[in-house]
Length: 404
Ligand code: ARG
Image (cartoon, rainbow, N blue to C red; front, side):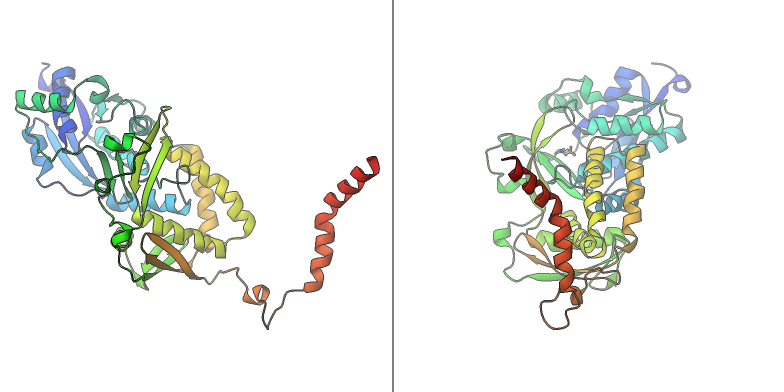
């Protein structure tokens, strides 16, 4: 082993789980490095023990815990919500948008500590390795990346044996057949019986929401206040972003809202079946879209949709820190200037329905829309408009007749 002052440092994305606990030891053994373990909170449930202390006991020279929840909300969740981000129209990207933030935090620590490498616990088959690796090199191209799980070939049992052999302290959790990732914006679940795309997800894949069949029979109403595309209040009460999301999450979970079963196209070419729970994301995205429908002109809504799709793809594909994503963000922000107002939602048995909307910038004009008294629409104008609108088709039909 190299002397301490000559040893390189590696910053490890550390969750406290089996893989990254072993990784501390494995990195020291295989790369002759000092390990700095960094746990980053993006709203996942806390561990039952002090994972920072455990990382130090397991051989890290330093360990720290970074609370990044508010940054996650402001710089990742809200931009995604403003873009109505939804990969393949189904997945609200909870896991995907947390990765660039985690990469950023790791790079900050690596810069501060003069580390040569960053390590993470992603496997070779997933999207997350791409998001971490590309995120890291986008922020500091000098850093090397080590992904122990792309290098070692150990089953879960072998990992446990490795831990025993080297005296690594692990938290023995109930063995779940699923691979689960959770944060404030969603819960992703794969593996086990879900690998059979025909098999209905058993109830135990759902960790957050009640079954809609067991949700209350009475609806719950909630008024969501938006300012420039961002939710700022619930039932008139102003709240901090993370608190607002948590509150919507609780309500939606209680009503069985936000369960998604999707076969998606991974970046590495594989189709994979995954279930998601995104109660807050589903409710807030529905509300946000409906706020846009009353405040934005038709051409903006339609054009924005193209960029929303691209935004979602870029976020999924690990290109968050790229000029295209940032430029789309700037466009989206411009469109949100008028997306202010209130949406009334009704939550009932797996469904989040928009039942009302109002805005100082509303383009909805009852006088123009009404079929009753007070109609201000110029009925005579319709005839001339339709004459011009249909003229190309009419001309084509006449020409086709002449030819016959
Ligand atoms: N398929 C999702 C994505 O690529 C989630 C990946 C993490 N899922 C998991 N169950 N560990 O963003």
